Length: 423
Image (cartoon, rainbow, N blue to C red; front, side, top):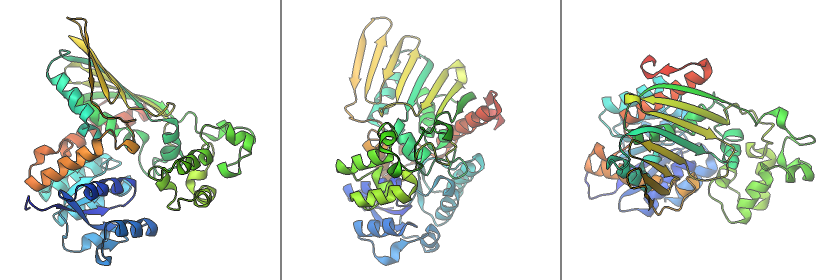
């Protein structure tokens, strides 16, 4: 394409993530521009079309209608639900669209391989939204490791503190609460982290083991006297519950915070609108009376080539904060909290601190520590220049890290060590 003109984006799925990537275009009109949208929700679709000045002819209810037309954009941003990625990817690739795909690629290995095959067959760029690779923090950490500052990596400990309220919002009440409807927790939330571990270690993963369960968010833990909806829960019970939807979502409204997660609950940002959504929609349910089945805590152990080991812990039961990592090398060790990196040198006994100057809790609300914008800048530049090397999360790298997730889930269910070569 002409590198002088903005990259044209077709947004397939105008929810939270699709809206995030579209917003980059709004803020960087010299780099990219939104030229079409497909979104089944009538309110979101209308609001999106108005926000980006889209005429009726490029506003669609179904992605199939958008992709039935001759190609009118350069990139299809696939931000549909997890289980609905493969078909739009294949249809968009057939039309010659470059592909920016929200993670996870697909909820199963076959779907992931079909996506990679579609991009290769039709010679289009594919970037997967593993935004943690694109943060200033990750760039700084990789520079420390590649400089040999701590020698060879021997082992890694990595923590994803999901946060008690994020778990309740997305994985108990929300879209990602049931494996059959979306994907396992490890894929829906933590494929970011497994992909990041593979990127940081820089070696292929050979074997995996995992344990985890849904421990807390179950009917038997519902407090005595609690109602199945927070808005009708007795005041004494509701006020004592850290997972109260009424307190949480009204608190965001009162603070003037109408973005994520409140914009997932309702588009009516009045007290009455929020209460009505909580009285009738999924986000007002008691966390102990939902139909969720994804785990709320999980541990995964990895064996990488050359004897390098890593452990990963995902848990719901934390305050909101960035991921935390400890990397142990032959000449030193590193601790990082998604913003500050502390390096201890065995020889000098000194600690060096690197502040990557990204104020972030590591969550979607902070743009994943700058990773959302970093991803978009890199992918748009790759399309403009025709240079796939600018994409840090391309098809083969992403397929490998997804296979790590599938191996971990097989291990958890079958209670055994799984070798990646078995998949």
